[in-house]
Length: 379
Ligand SMILES: [Zn+2]
Image (cartoon, rainbow, N blue to C red):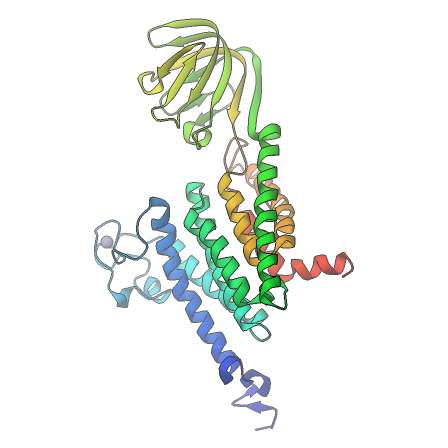
């Protein structure tokens, strides 16, 4: 055996990491922790948007309620051994579970290998941030929300971890790191809030010009426009979302109006239909038909959840990261939207949450975007 290797590995491989323990023993440990955290994230992704506790009851099969024993709850392995089925009723378990576990494990490992040697505490903080990203991404894709537990929780935790690991903010001491984190919260939240307000003016409400005297029908599930049918869940998402138009003629099931402004708000409690000065409970109007020239639909790329989410990113990574994330996520979002439209999987009316793009852009910042930008700006 040469004196530059030990057990077939270069000596550098065995070099000590934190607490004098070999660095790559830490690597294996961090990867394993990533798999376990991924397993927990599956629970978070499933339960948090439903306002269920993420700790109790223990995991159970959603189909047969079979409580999953610990030996069947091992990350990755259990899914493979059970071949993606419930051990009791054989109901299929989504491949998402193993994907989230593997991805979280890989992200933790990559973070550790990149930053663990010089800044182990920062690597740990970044792992926590990325775990939040993974949960936020899957929840946002499915439910178009990012829970406050993740966003507001992330702001608080980001501020605290910046104090524990000032390197996270590129700072040398705790006060500087706290200041940078606080600035990140305000700039991050502020830029997205600005875009949100601007977007509301520019694209927030989409005005559709139709052929003159087009007939548009509202039935129980959605709006039938001449070009497409849009389900209500794609339109009404916040309480303030409203479909508005000037009806040359409006027919409800039992009455008729001529030349009246109409406003439909289905997320109100109860859902409201306003015609001229009159207000109806929309639930009692299963059907209406309107003759119109144009219609205004509520559509926004971002929501207030994204404001809080970006503030959390700023809390962890500082304000330059949030400016980068905003720009890079817009590019990513546009590319993905165009790809989806080109492959016919999405139309313009479809909603895509913006959270996943913010998360991806912030990860790009951590893994090289930062270096690239600083180099480009001549630092
Ligand atoms: Zn089952």
